[in-house]
Amino acid sequence: MREDYLFVETELQPLYNTILEKQRDGWRLAQICATAYEGGNELIYSLAKGYKFENYKVKVPIDTQINSISDFYPSAMLFENEMKELFGVKIKSINVDYKNKFYRIANTTPFKKEVKIIKEDSTETSQNEAASSGGKIVNDMSKCILCGLCARQCPAQSIEVDRKENKTWSINRDTCIGCGACIDACARFKALSFAQNDGESGIVTFKKEA
Image (cartoon, rainbow, N blue to C red; front, side, top):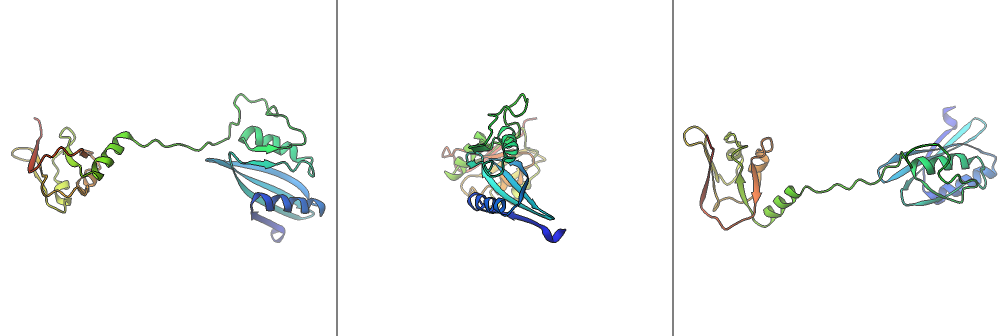
């Protein structure tokens, strides 16, 4: 039966035309199923005739309204009411519209997946702004372990670390090019970051408190 199985991804208008043609040619509606993805739904219309089985997939954004096919496939109204109530698919002109009372459920459209809005971290934003405006590198010595990895990664050799005697971390503001390589090197401990430039120049030293 594999040679009689068809799966096609299509758009809404070609889908309507195909389904109408299939109905006129004696195909029956087997099912309509929905799968939610962020910001929309994937609908699959399955049609059968004899030993032939064809599936037509269409992706529908949440805010897009689609036409019912219940005028020429009356049984479609069952699937369409289900998709409307569970997935939030907007369907107009369903032959029998249960108006979201098809199931007894506590929550409306429980399978609907809205678009997630990711808020940019304000700390990261301020650091990006500081970097783009020629900001300075600062060291949070409460997090710094004086490992020296930042100094080894600095292309301008602007960083010096005294781990044994004075337990200090120093940066030469005059030679620092603000590339951020030291911040990347310190990704594990997050001791280094960009701050707004206050005009400070020369060698600046941060000391590790005992």
